[in-house]
Length: 250
Length: 250
Image (tube, rainbow over all chains, first blue to last red):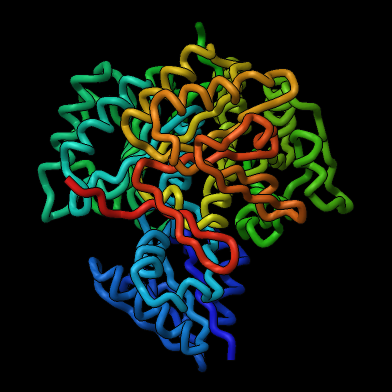
């Protein structure tokens, strides 16, 4: 039997945002591997074994998936959003590089998904409609000094920005420091969006000015978007539209 | 009759990468508006009018779509990839902001799609698996000096990078200048990927080192990905894997 591994993105939450390619891979799988809440999104069926594991065991989970594929099983590794954006794809390839030579010759594919920042941007209008950057604010796997350096250079480049993992119980101070850095680098009117649980029943989008933003507006379920200096707000009857124009004057 | 407008992303090309949400919007539409090659991806059917227009008329096209929605029609504006990434969403909102007040109260939604850089990254492995930025290299709508400044700051921040619209017949020199800037800021071994027509029958992925890259490797159908200083190549029997690890040492 010829095994394979597909590292897939389930999108931000809604079924209507899962690509047909990912749905087809799940239908052919014998095993699904991933973090507990993401595996819980996969329907049970005869012939499919669900392997849910806790956070922060990404390398163990990757090795388990690779082992099963080497044994001839059809393994889907699930992430929310896109698997290549602060998710399982890098972890699996770290395991491949450090693992037995035979793992390199496995049939491995990455199937993209709708990543949280683009789902959030769509809900708000088009805040990432011009050049932007994407930063993971967790300092679990990198020094805080690098995050600070990237934030300052991104602001100086006038990128719009998307932040993943802005704040957790174990790191309550990181996002407060982020807001302080942004206030040093950007004007107080800069638009900032807090998008929580996008496309899920408890979705909440909050639009603020940098001067009004507080650390409590973000948690681990939130993706934060910061406009460039040109990002605009269109007031209207319903929720306002936030977008970044295509044109930058000389 | 109550009209609406949906600004949707068709993904990079393959049908299997179109979200069910976008497919459903197209099924309910009375009118589809967009650039000729993207409208050509929508199947004709009775009751659906296709309005294909040329490149560089994004604002005219947006006003046409808004006019029709105000007249009670169900209008889908199509982009390839994601509509919020260098595509139609910003153009429509520019038209809304400058247009009649009534346009603001239209039922407008943006439906995200798989953007080219994430489809390309998935094909190569996980080159955008850590902090990254996304830059449109066209200087049609912004000064070249801003592009250069963003390139240098992004390299100094050690972001991985994705470039859209790297090179066209009318701008043959921009990508050559980009390579020169990258060579000044990055080491010669830096990994660079040229992903053309991802998920389409003529897909071609080329992996190079910065020292080997030439302007001819890119055209308007290409998205270019540049690794960070930590991005790695895993050699194997088939095409190699390129990925950026999650961990950054102190």
